[in-house]
Length: 114
Length: 113
Image 1 (spheres, rainbow over the protein chains, first blue to last red):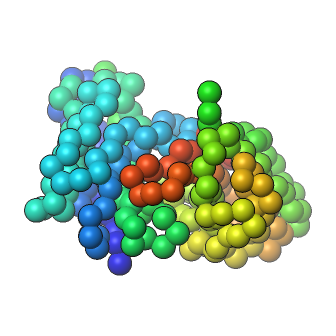
Image 2: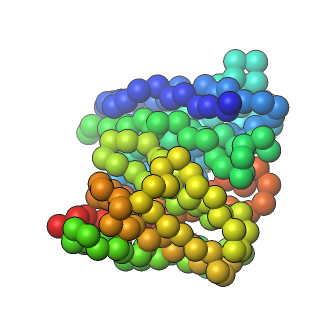
């Protein structure tokens, strides 16, 4: 079945460091891919998405490129801020997912220190 | 603005009580979902509904019940049969089609006292 695997956290970085959070997937057909962010005590917010191979999603300085050849959708940011501290979830959606459900990774906690 | 509203934000339950968590959306989305999140853990699907008057069990439905009488509303009842209900509960909705993803509510934190 379809699945998403994220790098384990927590990830701790200093302010202005470069961020990469790895995400790989297994899916039938051509899924859509998403990154969500969850700040402490809040719900998840859509950060960015890509719906076909080679698409790049971007938002708030974050980017991720849909790589079908490596089945990956890694999240990157060139210079993180303390305010980026949150949990990040990678997810996929496919017409083959029962009920149209999103398949989520386990989440990666990011902590950015001043 | 359209969105999805969960209430209350904090809820306390005594042992043996049933409690109902509210989820309302004005996005005209067909599908709605309930997830449970435990500290430091990912999301686990409780129930979902793709259309009014129909819903399906997710991965951890035991001890929970739902209804979908209106398109806008998908309340979750945590029954006394749920032995470990303390958790953060998230409601989400989505439009038809797999390109849209979910819109999430802000969550309800349930604590057993």
